[in-house]
Image 1 (tube, rainbow, N blue to C red):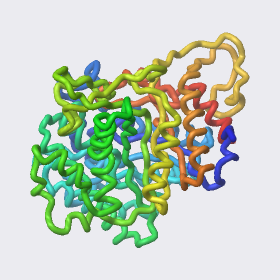
Image 2 (image 1 turned 45 degrees about the horizontal axis):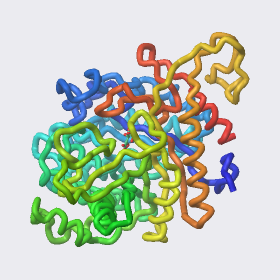
Image 3 (image 1 turned 45 degrees about the vertical axis):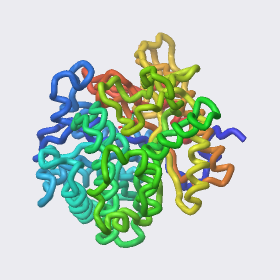
Length: 485
Ligand code: GCO
């Protein structure tokens, strides 16, 4: 069947949008917040396109109430966002900021009042700078600090949160942050990237334990990963092995310890020339291996790989920035191939079946673990147009939708609407084949600070006019509203 309205899905399915603190909040020096590695990185010349920073971003810190109203008007039943660690715990460890806690309690309360379930991510890449100065994710002290922070957040906010997520995409934090250096803290040290993998895994385990020790065994806890769907370009043994290696490095390096209590042997072998893994201590794998209630999946694209057996330089068209160094540690002989067919402004290919197949695969591997699509969406070069004629779309008459009259400012984002529609349909197909999927979150609620690309890439359902901070309903938001009603 095709899945054309929310009614085609289970009644308690979570329909949401996702954001992250540094990408939307702004107010970087308010309420006692201290700099995170993203503040430092964004203020380093040459790191971010057009010199953009998250200093103001979407000014969500001051406008969250308005933004929650937009979510409610759209009909969202869930919202996934992250806490700024250095807003909640300004020195990275130790005592909480009353202002930081009060701010998030206001956000959570506003969501609850609208019947929107808060999915709260503890770590979406914005490590307090003070912790990076002491070694960042290359040290186990950072994992221990994360456990403390998780405990404090659970105590301060646990009564208002629906579902906790320890980490968002540790792949990016480790390999883009410490490997290719296109993300904060911008280090290009292959062994450090592998240390970061391990200490992020350990942070997850310590975080789950802390959340449960404060909130009890029934508190819903998750982690969000961005599995790479690596497709070999041919059926040759060499190309299939390239896909295996990328799967190990990207996916099983996290799924293995978190869900099975061990690093995959092939991953350890593939990286043996870079590190001896002696920083993994006795008891770490037990600490990491905690039962969780939900696995969050962020999905955007597939990557197509082959093994470079010849002398030629490796091809790298992997959509992770034009960096001098590679995020694919120990995989120098893997080629990444551009795909024919439509791509988004990020250069990422559009392949809804990849999402369906990924969900099926994960369900096959972990049949008892519920899944949710915690991010999916697309950047396109949106244009604001002024429609002359009256608008009669789904938003007409809805508060905030600016639903009619001449001169309405519109964003006709057909490509994004089709992207979201087709990926929701892919989730429906996974459900139909028996996969336990609990939710779908669009990345993102509104256009925001897209990391190294600054404000150049727009992923939002709402268009952010950065000059005025006005939010405009894109056609995709109106489509989503109709889908949910
Ligand atoms: C991600 C992120 C988002 C990005 C989005 C688009 O986890 O990569 O969670 O912060 O903005 O994926 O690149």
